[in-house]
Length: 113
Image (cartoon, rainbow, N blue to C red; front, top):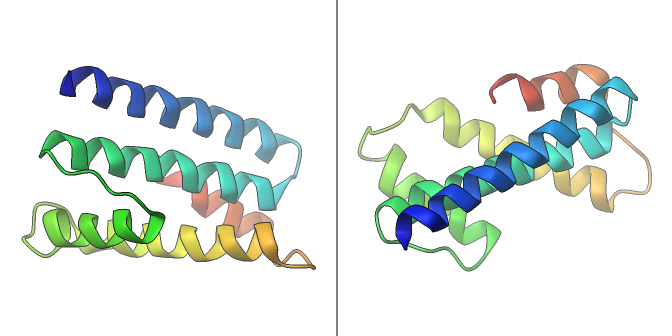
């Protein structure tokens, strides 16, 4: 059952990133960041599922990822920073009145994937 859940999270993540790349081609930078964030969020959920942990919120996923994969050195700290920046940029792009996301930020959002 856990393997199937992980596969589904990865499948969803791949779909979100494909959409992000299509949006990048159409210069929809806010939406690129949003889709990229959700791709990474689902990857984090897959990682957590691999150790029997489930996050109920976005903040919970970020915190649990830090606890189980960053603090113990299983993954480089740059991935925690990448997740935090994506989350912050996604919120600014989704909820802000004026778009502050520029092309270089959108490129950075999809480069790690």
